[in-house]
Length: 244
Ligand code: F6R
Image (cartoon, rainbow, N blue to C red):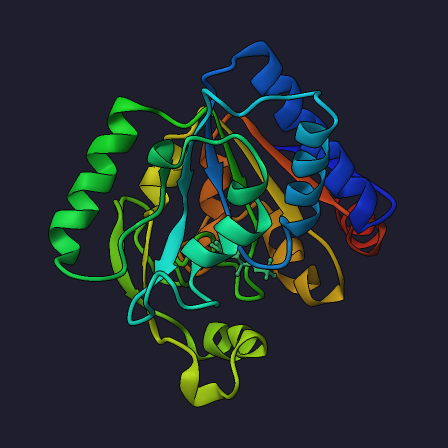
């Protein structure tokens, strides 16, 4: 795992956005794996700016998101469909028919299969990931088998509590989601995991211990040869103290 330490969140976002822009410039039909949450917001802002400045076109890019809540309408402001539309899709020249998110409604078995088939046809070139405080990637919570494909999950209490900041109260937070599995994520050709701030310290320290365990879903990334961990100074001071 390659580690890139930047001074702060803005510098991390800048670095990751430039990686994605370079990738798209070099391969215009790039397949991007995308995440939601607060971590990638700075990257999306910079991708929009790069598009507006004429530095990049998304016309031939395809995207696959990691996850979507179950029980929220796509049009709900806190759905991941709405998030992606607000943060990226509506601001750039992406063809919406090439933008895929798991379907959080209807027949989950059929939609999980369909998602895996589409991913087989269009393998992800770069997958962007955040990490939960409990070490989840996508919505694969601790204890998830590493060989899982796209599937339905019940969210951990900790994840529901973390997500509550986006909802009017705890009771309104969805408790289930559909997510790419760990095996699905590991099929991406390259992976960029971003983490910043004190809240992610424990998860990153556990990840950097090198122990591969289903108790820490992100540790599956040690089994992939092309992972870049991008962290800020808050985290890098701990990482260097424990790994040098
Ligand atoms: C989001 C996702 C999650 C988040 C993680 C961190 O699509 O799959 O794994 O990346 O929960 O969330 P933030 O970035 O809000 O701290």
